[in-house]
Amino acid sequence: MRDEYGLDGAMIGRASIGNPWFFNQVKHYLQTGKKIDEPSIAERAEMAIRHLKMALEWKGDVLGVLETRRHYGTYFKGIANFKETKSRILTENDPATILQELDRVKKSFFEKELA
Image (tube, helix red, strand yellow):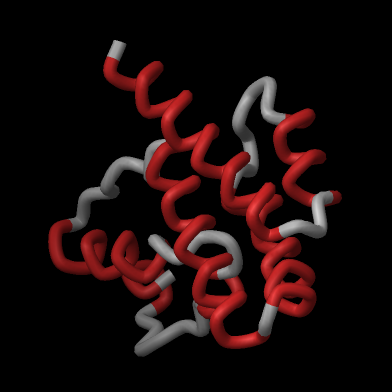
């Protein structure tokens, strides 16, 4: 849009919901004209773990879990065969169980990405 219409700026904040990598992706594209790779599933899981831990620290167990749920759908959007795992994460209320599940995802997919 910038190149085609000469825009000075655009609002991109909503695109970052569940995609905190978006700002770096935009910055990289504006600097180089090239897209960078999407984050791996392991990187997505690590970010979800970090996000939940920060929310728990700031909001407590109940609100921390509830307020981060809406982001998990977009963290893991488009990943094949992820429906059951996503359902477990989205319906669980115990933060420790969610963290275990996200850690399992991180390790499981990290090993697959190395293979």
